[in-house]
Image (cartoon, rainbow over all chains, first blue to last red; front, side):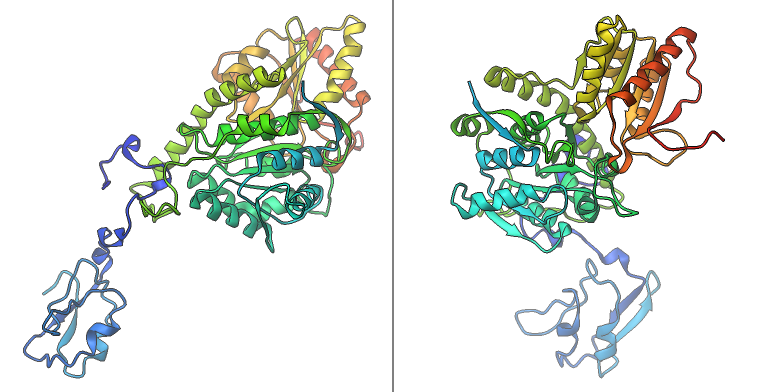
Length: 97
Length: 396
């Protein structure tokens, strides 16, 4: 892993990454300006929201039920809030409750 | 003792490629380099090589295919000229920044427009800052020899940079000259196998090539490229010395022709050096102390070495076969002059832009330059440093 403190000598030529499946290391959640909030009481677990997430920000458990958002990767696109028939997802400005 | 042959510059390069037998050649025809993939495709058709020849639909794709092949772990080569190189432009930078040691033969031609298919160096000068090693070749023999040395330089783990070999379109690419070839088995042994440490088709180590590289990282990766370019100097020296042991043909960063005791010298690249040597010989017979510095290794640029070599002269003319159109002089001139300035070598230097669009450069033209230089030697002054050679222009 490299970060803002890594010296050029310790970086790979061309930025090559010598392992697969590394996209999960790149947390893109800080691109978000709007933030989805899950209101669990209103959620009926209808299953419409998680298939439309363009990333993988709505985790689904072994019990087939969705859990709270994974904000490491959610960019706040709002598609999930749009498809929810029950008003169980609200978009809030990022950084405000 | 090698094999005596007579080949054009393009044929010589194609023969070198046959002997190297790369894994992939992806190329698109463009004058005057067309013959290189043309000859090479006959070697493929005749089964003389086991190269995968990719007849792509454009030069952008040619370089893209070479990048894909090289990243996969294969040895890839291509050839192009002028606007073909222009179309590769985007991928030229990708190749060097991904540190892929692709070898390209550039047969120099004017970049249009207006439309011109003849020789100058505007194509090469357009990519001089793209992170490619650039070797220039005076004649067919040098184009062949530089091609044989290319992979050992480019693929060295301390380098890992793409390399282009330049020669003058038509002037050497289509002129048949005597040439001494190496035997196939000796080439194979000299060039060796390509064994990259990391490559895409290694199923034991899945890797990602060319990932997103934003503000936190690109600067360091560019500095790594610059470092590799510095390392290339030593590698080019070593490979050239090995090549000399094998063939007896000596190659250095630049060739000093009768420069030791010279008072004035021309600095130039490619075929013009041959014309200049003939003029130097003539002038020497007349007792004129003329010399030549022929640049072989243009990138990395041997700034300090050239500055030292020119330091005892009384007048220098740098010949640029491409106009930088910047009201400040050609690219080779700027490189030479900045090298001399930072190394505290103070010699009057003038710049001549010449041979644009294939304008013939004759011995009389070179004689004119030495005649101008002798005036500078007398007066110690180099006025009007940005000059043209062979341009039709009124007095006003």
